[in-house]
Image (cartoon, rainbow, N blue to C red; front, side, top):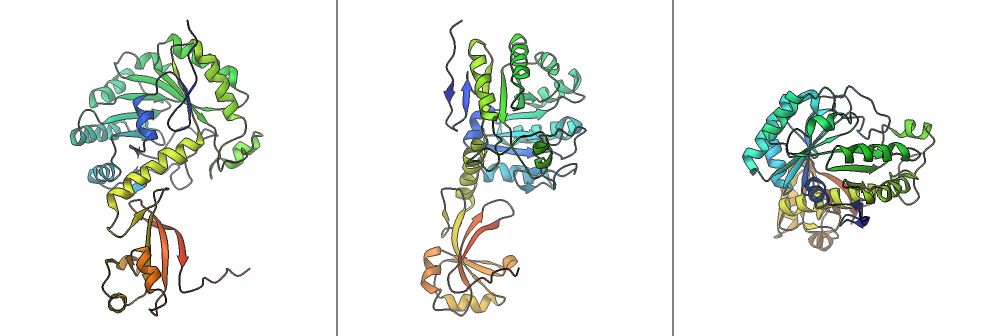
Length: 353
């Protein structure tokens, strides 16, 4: 068999073989993350779920808290999603919920709306897999229980695994690639191992350290991924090494840009990072502020005690009004927050030591 080439993807990750549809749309920022619950029967030391979601039965569509089905539909529209990735926690522990959401998404966005699900495989039997397949699940990604792959291959969806790429465990990865290739699985995704707020201590206890030039990636994981890719060149299985940079610089940034362009006000500018760039003016008496700023295009935000308008107008009026004026870059989630605030006519007091 001719050895395949290791190729760089549009998201600066590396792959041998053709990327799955789930990964391709993720790089474009067009895959909504549907977090169905933080409850999980396992506690993997490398898990990156945050403290505020871990073991809490909360539901999120991207960063939007989900209270009704409409919240999921609205978020998918807001970020121009062409698919969704179902994750948790352990989605298999909430099979009826997952089936319901798959049906809702397919009904609203059509059969081509691509849906994949991450699961350890915990308590997934053939009957539950049939429920998922019949609902419309397009792709299933197992994390721990590799024997579930053989069971899942009974259905004509895409089947694979997704695991962290752990330095020092290259032999185990090679053996898993051999197994999946023999089972005629479609793919394996190797995620660059990352620090997070909840797993930091456990990862350090295992002797791993942060990679130079990265906020989250762990030293040696990329090298382990490259070894796996080289090993897989003679196989049929698609192997994708998904980098920490892909998640931050492509998946998240592109999703933010898509969302920001869909929700921006006429005077807001979308930055290269997907934030909303604009001017703001603070005050309790918003009517008085409205009268003071004159005839410019603005929006009143009573929940934040401010009026918003273009950054250009903010620079023009900053020296002319007795109110605090600033330029902000706002994170464009369903519950937006100011990522950066630059005062134009006032000073921010330094925190006391």
